[in-house]
Length: 394
Image 1 (spheres, rainbow, N blue to C red):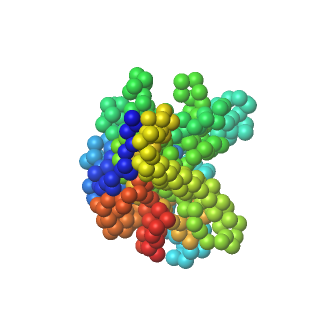
Image 2 (cartoon, helix red, strand yellow; image 1 turned 135 degrees about the horizontal axis):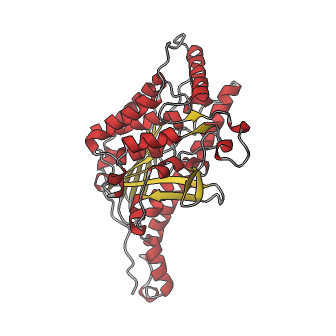
Image 3 (cartoon, rainbow, N blue to C red; image 1 turned 90 degrees about the vertical axis):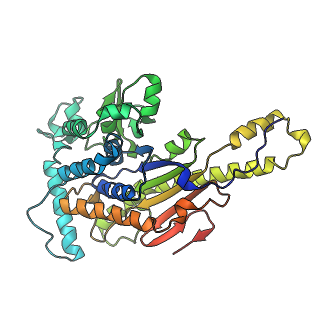
C-alpha cells in the first residue's frame, strides 16, 4: 500500500537550512555586502550561498573566508573597486547628484575599475576578428588576481559552505551552475574561473573558457539563482534570504535616462518575481495533491499511479525573505557601473538598513507557516508584505 502522508506539519523557519541568494547588478552589489553585514549582526550564518555575476563575487568572498573575516574581505573588495573622486556632488539636488553619477560612470567606462577590469588598448574593434581581444571592451585579468587574494578556494573545495554560481554557455545558450558540492562528487575543483564566468557580461567582458567551453554572465538567462536552489534541495527545509538589486516596481519615466533605467530594472527583475510566484504555486499544488490523496478510499491506495503521485508530492518547507534595493531618484541606467566611492557607501548602508527593517518582523523567523509550504516575504521600504495571497501590510 502506498504511503499517503497527511500534509506536512507547519514548521519553524528559524530551524531550516539557511541560504543566501544574491542577484547580479554590478556596482549595486555593495548593497548585498551591507545586507550580509547586518545579517551577521543578527547571527544569520548561511550554510549555502548562491550567486550570479556580482552576486557570485560576493558569494565567493563570503564562502571563501571564515566568518570573522568575511565582512572585512567584502569591505576590502568594495573599497578597492570603488573609485574615490576629487570632488563631491555639485549640489544636494537630485539633478546635481544625477550629473555627478553620470560623470563618475563615464570615468569608469573610460579608465576601468582597479582590481576588476581595464580597457583594452587598442580598443576591441581594432583587433583582428576572432582574436580574444576583439570580443570585449575590457580585460578582466585583474579580477582573477583579486579573487585569488581575497578568496580561499581550498576552503570552498573543502565544502565548509556550499557555493553555487550560474553562467551561460556562449555556444549552446544553456544555463549551467558551478556547485562545489556537485564538483566534489565529480572529483573537480572550484576555482576563480568559475566566478569570473558567472560575471562575464558581454560585450564589456570576455567569455571565460572552462573545460573547453566558453561561458558568459548568468544574468543573460536568469539573474537570480533561486530556481536552482529550490530544484537542488527537496528534502531539507529552507530559510532563504534573497537579495536583489533591481526592482520590478517603479515610477513612469519622464526622460530618456529614466526610460533606460526602467527598462533595465524590468529586464533584470521580472524573472525574479516570475520564478518566486511559479515555485510558490508548485509548492502549494503539491500540498493540495497530498491532501487529495489522503482522501482516497482504501481500494485505490495500491494503484501504481498513486505511488508515483506520492513521490511527486513530497517536498520541503521554504521561507523566502526577499530584500530588494530601491533606486534613488538621482540614479539612472548607469547605476550598475557607477563604481564611485560615495555610491558604494550609500548602497552598503541601504543593505544594512533594509535588513534591520526586515528583522523587525521576527514572526518571519519564529512562527510556523500556517500550513503553507512556501511563503515569500517582500520588503518594500518600511512596509512588509506576505506574498502568499492572504495578507498584505502596507
